[in-house]
Each structure stands twice: as structure tokens, then as C-alpha cells.
Image (cartoon, rainbow, N blue to C red; front, side):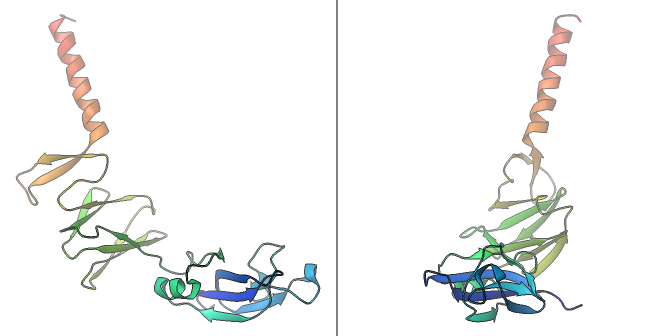
Amino acid sequence: MADKKCYGWRGKDGGGGQALFLACATNPQWTVNPQYGTSYFFPSDNGINLASRDYGSTADSITLLNGQTEIDAWLNGRSFGGSCSSCLDVFTTYCQGSKQAKVTVSNQEHIFKNTPIKISCKGTTLKIEDNSGGARNVEVPNCNSFKVSCNDDCPEGFCKCHSDSYPGYCCNDCSSTSASLQNISNQLKRLKNGR
């Protein structure tokens, strides 16, 4: 079976306005929407409707879009329906104007000196690209299991502590550290009170 790719369907709605739709497909087509007779169509893949049941536009064009830059240019700031996130790597930029970026996954740190970095996550693979074009794939439990920090800081929710090993500091979970300190404080109070 062929891999799905990102396509953009362009047509006009009943009022003559632009109708743009993005979706992943192997065999992109326009298919007549019987709800509107033979005048309006919906975007489809192998004849299967990809839009809502009431979608309808003229069948003007279908364009293969190979990346976020092409998508942005094709959309040109206009509103659209659908998404290509399931078949296209959509990158988010981090640490613009910073000296370094650190990506933390399961207590393992990945440091990048060429910022900004761009990150895309699909399934259990995190794709990280730095400003020099270097790329790294990192396995993650899920797409919510990584943290990014910029410069020489710890990710949000972590406290920076001195360390004798590289890079000279470590990051501890603030809530865990706070709970441990509270526990020690409670034990000292009990000892002081003779319990």
C-alpha cells in the first residue's frame, strides 16, 4: 500500500469564496457530494469522503504539499479545513535567539548549540533539527513526554542544582524535591518534639 501524502484541495464554496482543505491521502480525488446534486464535491481518498457530510465546493485543483513551508505558501494566510498532521512532519520552533537548546526525554538530555531547533513528533519518534541542518531522531514514550529548555536552564517545573559532572548542573523535579524537603522537615519536628 502506498504511503499517504499531504494534499490540498482548492475550490469555491456556494458563495464564491475560497474553500481550502488539507488531508493525507494515497489517491486524492474530488467526489460528487450527492447532497448537492452534481454541482458540488468533497475531497476524497479512493472515493471515501475526507470532509464533513455537508462539505461542498467546486472541484478546482488538488496540490501535493511536501512540507510545512509549502503548506504555508499554499494557504497564504487563508482559513482551511482538515489537517496533514498524521502524514506530514509538522515542526515547532524552540529557543529562537538562545545560545543553546536542551531537549529532555526520560531524564536523558540532548543538547543543541545551533539554535533555534525545530521539533516534530509522530507516534513514538521525536525528530529534532538544529539550525545547522543537523538532525536527530529520539524515541519517546509519547509525544507529550519531552521538555525543552533554552540557554542554560532547566525545563519548566524543574529546579537547577550544582553538579560536579558535565554540564555543571542537574535538573531536579521541583514538586518531588519540595515533597522530600517537607518530609525531612516533618521528621525533624517529630524528633524535636520527642515523638
